[in-house]
Length: 325
Ligand SMILES: [Cu+2]
Image (cartoon, rainbow, N blue to C red; front, side, top):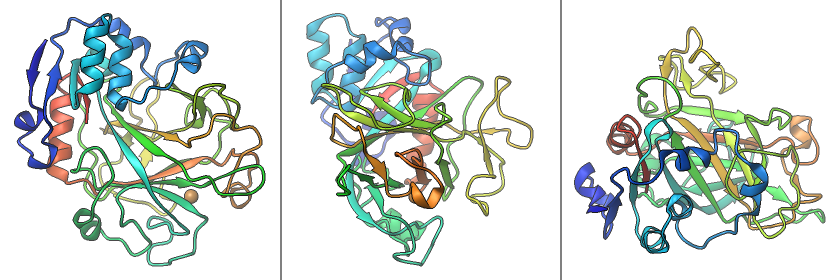
């Protein structure tokens, strides 16, 4: 095991952390792949995994480490890099910032026009936000270079009270295929809205892909809302009228015609802070023609400090690593 500083690798001051641990490939790549949220995983085993108070990456890498010593080191250290092969990714944790009836993508400059959204990371995201104002603002994400806009609809308890969520974990996966490019600066997109398509949006416990179209009882684990964004870009448009049609999901044969530009597969894992989600709904259900939390969707606005994002894509994704930011 070799200790390196990711900030040195990336040469980005805001990324400075005390230390980083690079795993030299001694962990089993199979072990990593087994817990890849994108791949079919043993849902029951994942659901029963206890929730750790360690860092996001600590949880993941701990699950693949075989010795308690390595595990404790990895939980304590951040960022972490590990050899990953095809399941390379970088991921960060963004704390809940504020809830507001704003949507800078669907209703720019129209405060109060939207259903109630939970905003994560950037503390300034509002209807009037611009790329410039976003980049100038503070972020609650674990990487200070990530001043992106991340939001999703507010969750309601069965008695109608609004749930204050805890945090959002954002994964940027390499996915299958050749090299990926960084999402272009200013890219806007919306994903989800109908959890009958579980591959795109739904609910889970702990890590892993959605296993339910409605919030449910996770026992001792925390309920998560999971949304998968499209990773094929048309190469021209940063947005489109429905905020979706400039993007496409890959098929078994890769990115479809007209959408050949591969960006990372971005996956949101929202931690609401509740265990039993039975009877919970979303504020967006009625407006989107859904019930029972089935309108789960999310918005992504790439207002990262772009140079840092480009470096992460090159270093972690095209470099075959797992990077915990
Ligand atoms: Cu919404």
